[in-house]
Amino acid sequence: MCARTFARRAVRELQGGGRQRNPKESDEVTSLKLALALLASATGLLMQPIAAQAADGDAGPSALCARCHDSQTTLTAATGGHTAGLECVDCHTDRRPGKFGRQHRAVPRCSTCHDETRHPPAVNAGAPPQKQRNCLGCHEVHGSSNLHLVRRLLPVRADKLVEVRFDNEAGAASGGFTDPTAPGTGLCEVCHRHTDFYRANGRGEPHFTDSCVLCHAHAGGFQPIVDDANCGICHTAESERFGHASGHSANLVCSGCHAELTSVPGPGHRRIPACSECHTNQTHAPPGHPAQPCVQCHDPHGTTNTHLVLEQVSITQGGQRPISFDNISGLADGSFASPSAPGTGICEVCHTTARFYRADGSGEPHFPFSCLPCHLHTQGFEPQS
Image (cartoon, rainbow, N blue to C red):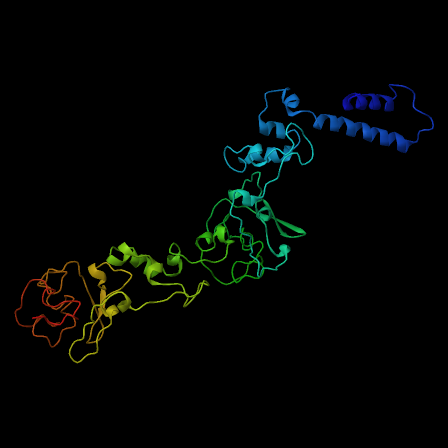
């Protein structure tokens, strides 16, 4: 007798539709028989071949899964699931081909497809597992109305769930990583109790408002990282200057000059090299003055002038003078000496005792072509014979 036939007969007997019930049979035995009948019915249904189940209709793999896993498939249908085009069977491989039942399909680890880095990371190799979050602590693999499969309800403690809305990657915005309109309710905030910034209680020191993942990458377990892509968050002025065309910006990135001293962001975490490590040019040493450093006339990160020449130069007489330098013609506006505004060229503004092209606009007549053929930068602009 098959399980389904047995189940039908047992239920009919218990309902009085079959042979008479044994008067000595207790209520407990009757209840047990009913439970066994229902179990036999379910077992017979679940252990049928998949082909027989699918014969009721032309159902796809996910539709067939929905008969038992309705909550997961409903969530997938409502939110778009894990990713577009992914079927249940793509992740859950068949462990018992042709059969239904408990553990009939595999439940894969996230690390099968994803680089798994836990957050927060272990303080040391022996840290208890409960001190770390796994992927499922923050993500619902079958789908979510939040971005990146982030759960709507996050388990911030063993006995507490907090509802989270995450629909944009802004650093400080409603529905982002932190919420300035409701401090402590943003995705990054709800769990933080000991951080310096953006705590669950709405407190913390002021911090950057750019997207958190610029410095706290998911791939690194959200540990703070510094790379060439995010230097500008802290070093805004230098980053803006580096955007100007120059030999430095065309050939280098930040880390090309600034080697890492420590992986922890903060003052002194990167090295500041001397210009002489790459350049052999002599510095300019006017008579009666010490040799001028390169940064007296240049900004290594870039300027609106050509050749990294500063827009404001500190002059030997004291104070600063504005400089426009866009060509190396010699006696020309925007060059070494200015014919329309004598004394304002890059070579003139500091000259007080030179015979030619002085800061006060005076001086003897001199060659009008480029200064560089006779005054080499590599020789500190000393005249060459």
